[in-house]
Image 1: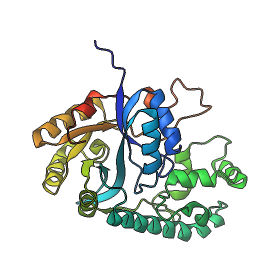
Image 2: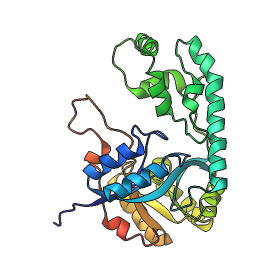
Image 3: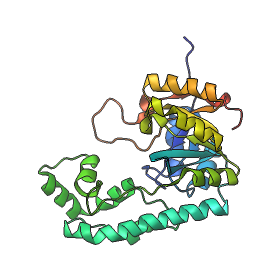
Length: 292
């Protein structure tokens, strides 16, 4: 068996959306894992792209401009990846600012309701620059910066240790007055924004949001401009990877792949500390994508 030493990763996230590291720190992590081609795909923002590309050049990694947009199509909540676009494009950035403003408005609405439950959140501290994406992970980091919040969470859950999904279910899940949802835009609009900026549109980890019987949706998306499918994904099982590879070939779409890396676990005493320790994509995949 041929040993693979170089890898690519076309979906990673920085703290400009819901990742844990700056773009420069992120590139350092990618280099340690022998990743030679990488795309920063922060949600609904391109704020970290400039720093990411600079850090990639210094690390001798081919950096690719990217983003991941939350979209709706025929009643489905999907994720659309954009690649190789002009990240200074006015229409794209104005749309991201609008999404940011909508999320900030939601946060301002629920902040006083959370306060009544003993949880402090200061929306103005989270707002950052106008194109910054206010992720739930960002809210969590902010929330846990207040010792009184941690004390309250421990009291509410009845134990000193907890998982972040428990915080979401306790205070932010759907159905609660303090629900903090994602902001979705129509697929057609997102597709236009990417194409208008000169980029390619790829459906992100479809196996997470769709079933095999929904394959007709991917064909419909191709008809309105979809360029590819993220076949290799940490969210996919082996059977899903094979299925979407065959579908990409059948429909004449690009087959891309990404780990969806966000963070590294610390002080967990586990055999692995990040998704990069068990999920790697051979750089051959990138060489097969002629359009990039």
